[in-house]
Length: 246
Figure (tube, one colour):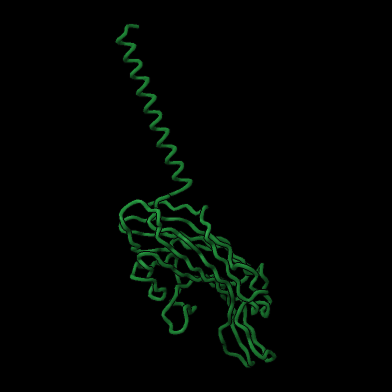
């Protein structure tokens, strides 16, 4: 092999090697992104608080107490500015909860999803007009206002309720008072295992013309509300939550 052909062969081998390294780096970055998601978001999911309890709504009956009993799970989802974000200043345009699904139904009752509402004095009213069908959107605003479905454009929170309805009717003349919490469930012969269910939904944060999506899933209700009355958990570790840019 003459020197000229040897040079061409070496150049070709170097080019192939460099190309292979570039492909390997690209594939590595892609795989890492699929596993870890976007690590430079202008806003982070900072906290999720879940409050589980139960209550009754008054119904017609001949006894002193007549209540339809249902079990509520309220989710508070908090978004904060990422102090380590590299890039131009961003504001939240909207936050959407999409693909809301009941992945495992409870043994008793029917799960309905509600948005906050503007009924005076109540954050939620479990009425048909406030039902959420698959998705719920909060618009960016000066500050968070859950009843107006607004989230702070520089960080704030969004709310949603998962309610287990149709658990039974309680009627009694014997009780001196009724406590509207999870202890009501025992009065309609409902156990903790009867009401366990799983949910899943996508959290989509839109800033300017870019959106970030992650899936969240939970088992509800939290704690043992039949004994505790009201239970709550606070989640701040989202190491397993992967946000990807859309």
